[in-house]
Amino acid sequence: KHSPRVFSGVQPTGNLHLGNYLGAISKFVTMQHDYPSIFCVVDLHAVTVPQDPKLLKEQTREIAAAYVAAGIDPAKSIIFAQSTVSAHAELAWILSCQARIGWLNRMTQFKDKAGKDKEKASVGLYTYPVLMAADILAYKATHVPVGEDQKQHLELARDIAAKFNNDMNAEDFFPQPEPLIQGPGTRVMSLKDGTAKMSKSDPSDLSRINLTDDADTIAKKVKKAKSDADVLPSEEEGLEARPEARNLVGIYAALSGVSRADVLSEFGGQGFGALKPRLAELAVEKLAPISEEMRRLQNDRAHLDGILMDGAERADAIAAPILRETKEIMGF
Ligand code: ADP
Ligand code: NA
Image (cartoon, rainbow, N blue to C red; front, side, top):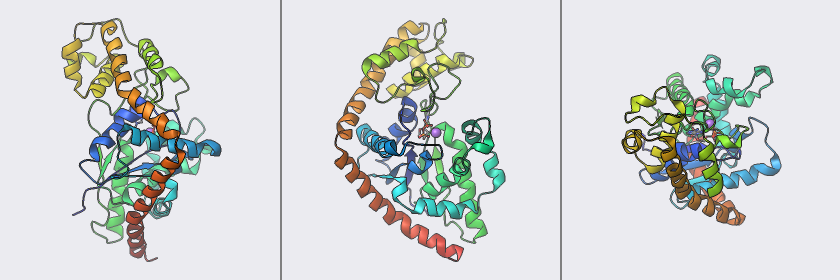
């Protein structure tokens, strides 16, 4: 009974990388053809850790440029910045009164991001998943394409929606948003260490391929990527105890739009000396047109700001009536 709608977001925190592209943005591009879609630049999430105010807006434009350059059509899909639609923050408060402290205590991302002294982390970093639930439910979104690291947060959003519907006697008011986490690119690992997620915040630039890297940089990073001396197996089971090999094969598969098994049937029996140059070529072929278009778009701030402003209006037109109804249910 809930009509399908896609919502997802990316934080404007710089260093947009191949994991963000394969796990999220490339999925957005294909999904927009199947469902009405909303793609947010989640700047309220970004400030859960300190950000330079002088850079934040520029980084917001950078994500908007990446969305458009990757192929999201701003005339069809909605692209906007989270802080410009007040329903996100307002609904987050209401939902924070539904979410239980015990639920948030189980979130592994907080444990990873808060560092050693958890008492010094911001309250916002702790309640981040509640804001994420609000992002999704503000639009009654039904489908949420994300990388695997967001799975637990999506489960929390589902629990919050269910508790609200149940406790407020509002049967089926919020949908149960479905995570869409499929294919070999949903968990791209660091190039330096196949057991850590490729991430914007890794201090080593060699750990990730950035969307803005030029061809030489991509080639260098792929060449230096950690691998082993063995040949590639011809079956997937052969990758199980070889995280670096599994990662490079997965990246190759995601970039070429095939399965890991297909890659292994091509490269099985050969070493990384065969896979790596082809992988670098493929990454450049996919990313160069995107980064070129990003640079072009980033030179036209007025155009990007226009896209974000138009998107904010269209997003607000959907979220405002849902928020109004939520407040009525609450007795406000
Ligand atoms: P990051 O985790 O790099 O700081 P965000 O939190 O802004 O980036 O995440 C934006 C999207 O990119 C989310 O859907 C997230 O799941 C996805 N994502 C982030 N890192 C990876 C990765 N290494 N592999 C696959 N998807 C990822
Ligand atoms: Na993330």
